[in-house]
Every structure is written in structure tokens, then in C-alpha cells.
Amino acid sequence: MRLSAAINSLKSSNLISWKTTGKLQQTLAGCIELSGKTLHSGKVSKVKIWPGFAGEGRYFEFHSNLIPASIDFVRESLLCTTLCKDGYKIRTVEHLLSALEAKGIDNCRIQIQSLDSEDTEVEVPFFDGSANAWVEAIEQVGRKEALDRCGNNVEKLAPHLSEPFYVSRNDSFMVAFPASKVHISCGIDFPKVPAIGCQWFSSAALDDSYEKHIACSRTFCIYEE
View (cartoon, rainbow, N blue to C red):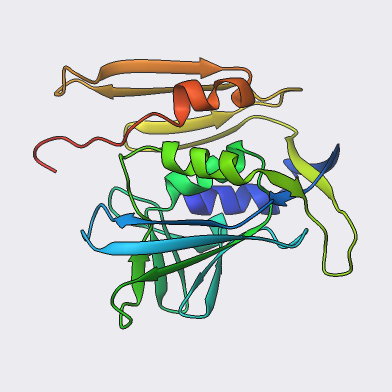
């Protein structure tokens, strides 16, 4: 089963319930604008991230088409995460979305464009291969309480798992267990690449360790790729 299909199945089951967190939804306190080369095409793209309304989440705008940053729009793609809707694709979104989630930006409009106005797909700039550039930009503008279109604040919800969930593909797997707090453990094994090898990372407090251990992690590939 594809990961996206497995997660969609999980979302529609009774394994997940949504509960209030006691926190209000947040957005950016200002606009972010960054541009740079992309990884797979080598083209230059420009990204503007605008403050968003509470309850509307994070979404991309490309050629006036809106593509939510949701697992519902993820498509199979090689060596990157791709969102697709109505024939338009946004590629290599993982570092940007990681930074927005970790820094608590629940709502924003991500306007993206390539230099070629005829393109039907576009990539997020790659920078040094990590999420650092996005984290620094978010910290520079700061965040604020998000209001809905009627001027009201909205409480943030979080998913709670009622029993263990498991999905695998080839030699990769993911498993989640019910817990009162988030605890993440992940590992990779590249025996043909001694510089990478087998590594494990574990964290019980994502907010405290994201900038130090996760945002600075850089994408790599082996020579044959």
C-alpha cells in the first residue's frame, strides 16, 4: 500500500480522533520572499509566503491554482515530495513544509512561480539542501495569532491515535503508537555509502531539537542517482 493511501485510510478510520490543544492557530507576522535554483530541473523559482486566515491551513498558489499542502494531493514522484491538482504540480515541498510545521505556522498562502510562464510544474528552491533558509526567514518575520475571515481566533486541534498503526514498503516501514506526548525515532541504512551508513535519531521534544538536529540536515544522493 502506498504511504499516502495508507494515511488516507488512517484518517478515515476511527483510529484517529481530533482534540483541542488549548492553543490558538498561528500565522506569519509578515511576508517572506525567497528565490533560488531548484534541485531537479535546475531552474530558478520564486516563493512568496503570505499570512493566512485561521482555519484555511497551508496551501500553494501556482498560476492562480490553489493546491492545499495536504497528503490528499501527494503523488508518487522520484526523490522528492510532489503535490498535484488539476494538472499542476509543486515539487520538492518537504523542507519548506517541515519548517512551517516546526515553527508553528498553521495558516499561510505560499505563492510560487517559475521564470517560464508556460510551466505546469514548479519546484521549491533548494538552497543548501536543508530547511535552514526557511527557518531563518520565518524567525525574521515572526508569527502572530491567526484570525478567520470574520475576525475570530480559532483553536488548534491535534490528532490522537487510539491504537498502533503500521505501514511498510520494500525495506522501509513506519509505525505509530498512542502516546501522551510526541516522540520520534527514525533511522536510515546506506551500506554502500560509508559516509552515511546506518544512523538513528530520536527526539522527545521536537520544538527544542528542530533547529539543532533536523532543519540543518541536508538532502544527499549517491553517485548513481
